[in-house]
Image 1 (cartoon, each protein chain N blue to C red):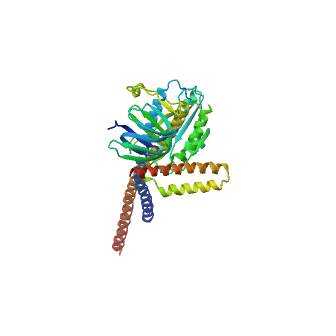
Image 2: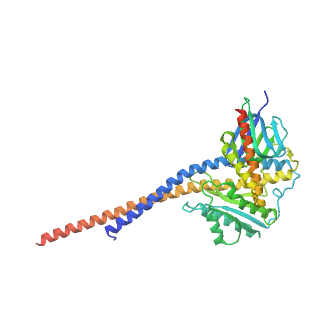
Image 3: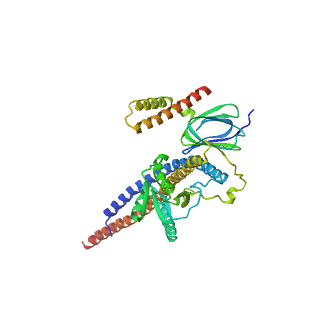
Length: 289
Length: 139
């Protein structure tokens, strides 16, 4: 059995770890609130632009814009959104698992895959995984700006425009609630037709365009649509990151407390044993005299 | 009283305005456009400049949008701005400074790139100042 001093040292070091995890938990909790606010703030735009895109797509049936027309699948671009930092439980692993599932699904159909990694973890994941990485974006911080993401999105859309990609999907975490985040796969381009349910009760109308060039406006609209979807995914992923980290750190703090209690028990027993032994030695010595 | 309709002004980072209005004025790609209730469905680009909405009670609110898309549906108007600010949040001194800076950058034009960025800067700063002018007029 370890001596009393060694156990004391161990307890001390675990207490220090506990302090750190506890502090991280509190930092994550306050960042989470802000991240959730940001997520809520960017939602109206994403929702609105989605509506406008669909109205345009449905109203303008004759326009066969490349972002609307379905193509034969030869190569798919996958954007994987992860966090920049670790210590957030199984968040990134879940996304990568979903990504690997998608990749396998496409490969089985004989479809080639190319990647875009957003977040340090996803960049290093694809470095290990291999395959062609078209673009990366990392070090986004807690409050990413749209501009930080535009480069990566541009590269993917350019590849799509040139016909090097036939579909772009994005995989990121969806914020269900503080306790639950789940990875989701969303298709960015070509735009998937809405389900009949969503469409019901809405009369498509034809727009006037100013300048009178639907393709040009549609171009801008759809580019912005994709950008806003990516931005939304990244902001949502940050909210997920903070809540997952808060949870992971809470568990770590609780576990540290448990270990400290156990060690304290061992320490007390060892101390008691030593005292008992000393007394019996003294008594034995006294009896011998 | 003029008929009113729903108007939403949203930017990527926040929702700035949502409510009933009787008129929307914006800087379209092809000049100023004013929209009243019953306007035909329209989709157009918005150039950087002031966006002014007239509320049902006749009060006016001014925003600044640095480009985006304006959509008119039969019963609502949405402005999807790239970035937008409330009129009251605009910083006149900063806008003036940006204008000066862009002008001086243009004066010692060293490369083609500098020139075009300076031009963009001037356009942006003047658009901001125009929005500020609007805000003042409404006070």
